[in-house]
Image (tube, rainbow, N blue to C red; front, side, top):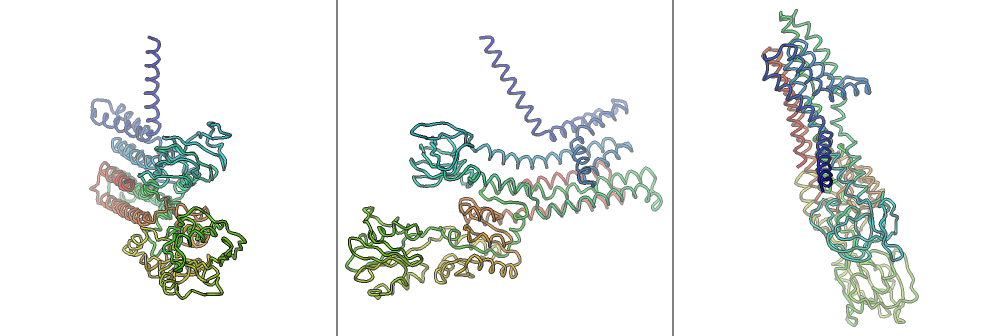
Amino acid sequence: MIMEQANIQSSTYTSHTSFWWNTLKRHGELTAALISGLIIAFAWIMEGAFSPSVEASLYITAFVIGGFAKAKEGIEDSFAEKDVNVELLMIIAAIGAGSIGYWTEGAILIFIFALSGALETYTLNKSERELQSLMEIQPETATVISNGSEMVVPASSLSVDDVILIKPGERVPADGLIMKGQTSLDQSAITGESIPVIKRIDEEVFAGTLNISGHLTIKMTKSSKDTVFQKIIALVQEAQDQKAPSQLFIEKLEGWYVKIVLLMGSLLMILPHFLFGWTWDETIYRAMVFLVVASPCALVASIMPATLSAISAGARNGILFKGGVHLEQLASMKAVALDKTGTLTEGSPVVTDVFTRSDIDENTFMNIVASIERQSTHPLAKAIVNHSKSHNWLEPEEMMDHSGWGVEAKINGISWKVGKLDFFSDKDGFDSFQEKYAQLQSSGNTIVFAADQHGFAGMIALKDKVRSESATMVKALKKRGIEPIMLTGDSEQTAKAIAEEVGIETYFANCLPEDKVTHMKELKKKYATVGMIGDGINDAPALAVSDVGIAMGQGTDVALETADVVLMKNDLGKLTRAVNLSNRLNQIVKQNVIFSIAVIFILIASNFFQFLTLPLGVLGHEGSTILVILNGLRLLK
């Protein structure tokens, strides 16, 4: 019993030790900065209680503890890039302050610089932790059903067509189709939506989603590396590695700026003594203050923390950016081209109206047509079969498919033809349908006719339904000054009807993939920055040509790979959120840059007129750096 208690206490102690050790490792820079701050505070409070050498030793200890990480980073980067950087500039300024007797000010400079660096590292680490948490969602094992028996295997060993059992509370290990069962799935990791969705037989499930209620048996349809979940992880990693143009510009500027500051600092150590009659102590002091206040720390930190915060916020809400450059460009977008099928519309046609000849009832007519169309894989054929209420299928004979036109078959010995109007050379009985046909076609419907030996027996109107959010999205884009333009391969009449329904004024119909590219190039000449939203293989060339390619999350692999931004869950409403996020990012970056430059100019001018002390210079400079980082972190909300 005593041994058990000892083991429990030992394991508890080990777990606590491990927790604190992991916390220290994760927040190492912040810990070092705080320890440095405590030493500085102790030395300042006890000022006069110790000899000058002891006080100097305390401040030097604070220098080393607080400045080690940044000094190491600065030296390594300087050697790697063969250039000076802001970290080296700050270390030189702090040592210079100490060398003229201002140990407290030099130590405070190191402390605040270390604190601002810790905040920047926190932003980077938070972005990495969110990616790590995504990776941890992916289950490591899966229950495979083989020859009637269940077997737990590593998820990495799964292959396409494996049959997998998923119990309540488990995460889906692979993308697949439901073979058996019904459940509620939490898809927030994939789509950003917190409300669970009902999934039934033949519906798709995604790796990483959580099975809430029922038992599911699924058939794996994609290899582990090709799942939607893995693509999200890859896209987030890619986004973190890419830098925005403004960030790249600041980094290029940094090396030259630091060299100029060091040169100016060297000149200020000598010239004011001869030009303005300053004492040597005052001249060197002002040179040290200049090195502190002219450092571009706040300017350097103006962009990257804000960009990473925005990318993280987007990923949490089902908007995946492949880099900061695309996030920035969204705000400058003046027009966006939208594909129709699968983007503005659901991408799957449904039967809207059925009209039959007076001697045949609708159910019988639909059963005959659906029995013939059941053999086809065409989307219109599938829609007709799904609409038919009868599943008492008739067996067609002597079927003959006329690709692109229609099909012929015999049902119970009677010859039937099903297809578009031009498929029928004999238009006997068309007069009774003509008025309705013109009406339906003008409203964007696709019409399928069926005829027997007596002529036209009926017609079926089908329409690809417009997404519920399309009109709202179009209105929101116009309000933001972004012109929506529709590109579609559909007919002029269909394109016009859909454009009117969603509120788009400019559209281009009958577009082949190369036509979409041509239109995109023309639009870029007119609007400068143009986006493109699509989901299919035929959209990929136009997505590549656009300034910002945006893919629907359930689109084809080619579209997803070509695009710069991915909207998960095929939710067009996320486009306006993405534009808002881009606008917020650009506003915050502008605020940070203007504020940083203004502070530098004010501090330099104050130093030149000799009323800025080193402590105030340190406070103003490093305080501005912390403020711009905190301002960027607001984008995480």
